[in-house]
Image (tube, rainbow, N blue to C red; front, side, top):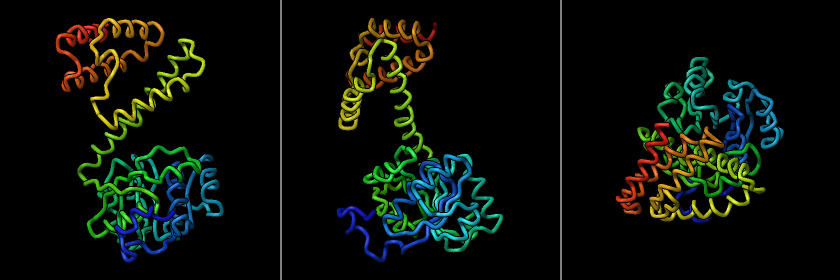
Length: 307
């Protein structure tokens, strides 16, 4: 995938990485999609490693004819290696590859973890690798749709200053938007994304289950327009977009909610109370919730906690 026209003036041809052979260590949902995107930009995937049946299927679907080989062999064949393993597995993988001599000097080593910057790649750097942290701020399905979703996707980029242009150019070639994140800010950056995206899935799934219990035949169809509008309003206006009984200070309605949830879905009560309290705090701070109404509301939430 070529860079969108609006970005092409930002990097001269000399800044862009040469056509590279690409390898993937960890054929989860992310690695094959990024490699497929790099292939559209003219790079050449040459090797992928994966263990589970699902990994093998993903690699075959997104990177057909690319051989499945052990991690060390991926590094032997590729100029650019994508390390797309779970966060907790990344430090051990990097140390193991460095200790076994699998890393070649001058090799681009890219991890896609949101949590880590480039310090986690220090063992590889000492072996001569060029470390990059390129984290796509996107949820992945493990299918071809992921490649399309990379268009306009922001990437959290961390790299040594001398590799910054190369890192940003790779992101642009995948159709993404590079966003520079300082090494020390990576954990906070990742926590922010998890708070928004991961917890959103939990909230939506709970909401659909409750609507189903309430007799709604198509919870997804009911929620789609509502949640789409709420997300759009929040992105445009932040806390000013808050609506609903908590922001209005309707303590009686909130009490009824808690009672019904406790009766039909007790596992959702703690989350409801926590989010309601956070919403009340933000509504108060931004002048949306009247202080005289907040007292009764907070009392209801405290009573819910006590029970």
